[in-house]
Figure (cartoon, helix red, strand yellow):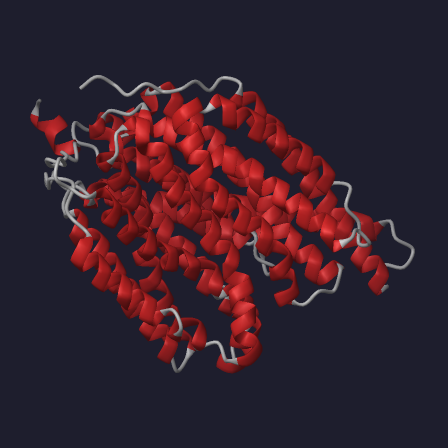
Length: 485
């Protein structure tokens, strides 16, 4: 093996005597609370604006800043996992998360709360790539489906219960308890992983390309920042900073890709895209993530602003689907190991198409039970697509591309999430304005609700187009074979 290849490869240690289950439990516990934190705070924004005496556009930085840091850090994680051991990376991430949670819980003013939130985001940016890379090294391809399914339970379930749990806590306690109640679990995760988590990779310490780090930061950070701001209520697409961020981000990203392809030891190796199933799975996951965000963002808006539900009630409506998605992930992981991706991904995209079409038919008088059922069906479809497609794509990569493949997938999911929020909120706003422009009484509350429903219908229709595109891609998916060493 040449020097460049050795530097890029996370060489596995002798895993013969390594107990996998305690390591998997350590990863899942830490990741659960880290990812739960991502949506736990969103429902408290109204309380925070009052308590901290700041505007809503200011408080949104708790979300925008979080996404920005995660979007910047995940690509760099492909380099970091080759410089630090599994224990150092994961325990370090959980210690940072614990510190960030403590800072947030005692924050006397908004700037301190934002600092604590960004520290938490730094932890989240390290968590998923480390977890997925460890699974790839620890489990052979024929057993990865079940292990990745356990990760899927965390990724899908934790953010879904966040708003419901947050609403329950805020009903009787103030917003600081959102952090205080998580703090002991974070400390427990640090102690548990310190005892049970073992190193599964050898540190290779490849050369650090500073220019690539800078271009990656400007590229992914600029795109996430631009789209996040485009989806906000104030400024939106007309804001000059949106265009400037997207232009700078796009140019930097193109230069970053060019530099990685030219480098003998790239920070984020784009040659992973030479594996056809990895490329197909990446594109498929991006499209499905966009369709997912059309529902994750629009349904709560419809429930709260159209059907006049409380935030807690809307969270309860979304809870069964999220819980089902998480619970099904280990099941679909095991089915993937046995039957391969086609038996899951193709039917999953068909379910997604049917549900997205039915979402275009819902009205303000649609029974809550119907919305819960549709959301549950969508969750079934997503659980059949996401982890099987992702695992299949990663299975085709040679071991030296594991950290790069996981970083690429996680980065693009984060970027597609930011794009999805801005894109579908923009479509909804445009559809709402078009309806009101033709209304005889645009100031009427009833007409405002009807206009919102019309805008959401338009967004769901675009989501349906994305679902059809996902089905077409799914037809080309094949079980990936692990490359010969």
